[in-house]
Amino acid sequence: MKISFEKSNCCSVVGGLFLLLLSVAVVAADVAGSADYPQIGRFKGSEITEHAIEDYGQTTFATGSVKKASDAKSTALTVEGKITRIVYRVPAGVSALEVFRNFEEKVSEAGFEPIFSGGPKEIDKYNFMYKHPVEILDKISIGNEIFYLVSRKNISGIDVYLSVLVSPHSGGDGQRVRIIAAETTPMKLQMVDAAKMQLDITETGRTALYGIYFDHDSAKIQAASKPTLDEIAKLMKTNPALKIIVVGHTDYTGGFDYNINLSKRRANAVAARLISGYGLEADRIKSDGVGYLAPAASNETEAGRALNRRVELVKDK
Image (tube, rainbow, N blue to C red):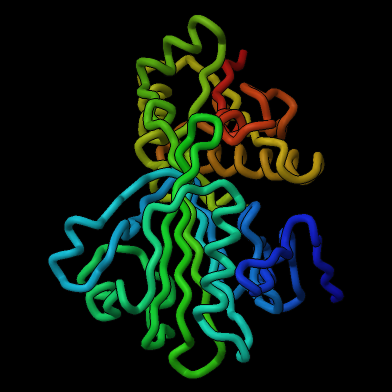
């Protein structure tokens, strides 16, 4: 597959060093369903070996120099929200420092403000990997050098934290790049108890839920959804005459057919879990999905898209 560069976005000169990051790139060797992180891209010739998105999770960043074990406490920043994790393999022929400087510049160009950036002089490999709670992907492949940065950007009221770790592969197979991004989400959106659900349904005929999480591009329900599912079951058991339609909603990332299908599969999965996992009667629960046809907010911002990704319970006859 031929890959071209967008000169206006991905190629610039920094002290004589050409940036070789693609603004958008997908190559045949990438793992299925993977993609570059928006506005960051990849180093030329890289391939994605790991890719995962967690709708709501937790990760820890290092915000300063880690030379000794005691540095862990003062430099640990733990955040919660939508977590994206990507690992790249960079072919042999370039140094870890060259790859890192490219990413460092690209992150800055994307509008992220630096919190910490350093290499072997600031980071002791043993303490960083084993004494600090910082999340490191694919630990076993890390060589002797570690280059690491963490930065922050506020997008429409949401703080986004981004870390980039570059290190040689311990087996000599080029460099490895590990990106972790955390898009923090206000906790007030996450939990709705049975009483609030009942009030919403009584007043408006529906209630919106933000505490049901799915794997990326999947209808697999994550374990973190259990508290919200418990509350739905409580609602249904305390109101034995209530019948509901579980309706899946998405943002508009992706095509129309894709989102309609995804929203239907997710709604079906929730309904099935309520029936099989909580013993609720099947004739009380229907399911459907409307994709991005009923947005709760603008799809032009991340904050709006976060509000649009939801499950609603609609009162049925």
